[in-house]
Image 1 (cartoon, helix red, strand yellow):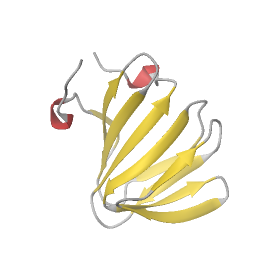
Image 2: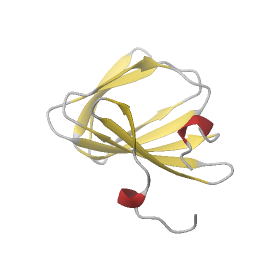
Image 3: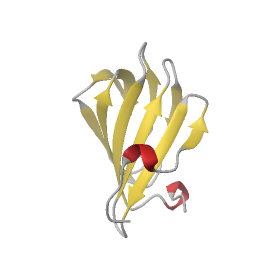
Image 4: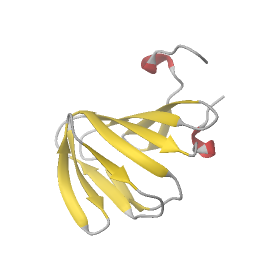
Length: 109
């Protein structure tokens, strides 16, 4: 895939209120997440490096022991194996995540 339109990428509902779309190359992946208001992303960790950028809306994000509200135009850098989770606030929210290495389980043919 060389060119893409986000809304034309296959969407996967990961949790109620959370849809993921993804593009990738051999060594990098970007995911586009749309969240319904009040969606909760449970606390978790993974071996991937992750950068999250809030495109619109807002979420309360916990990284390790620190919690902050992230709004459109803000983001967070998540090192490998650091616990993190989030709670979407009152409005629908869209976030973009960059990954290395690629999350093989996020690939959709």
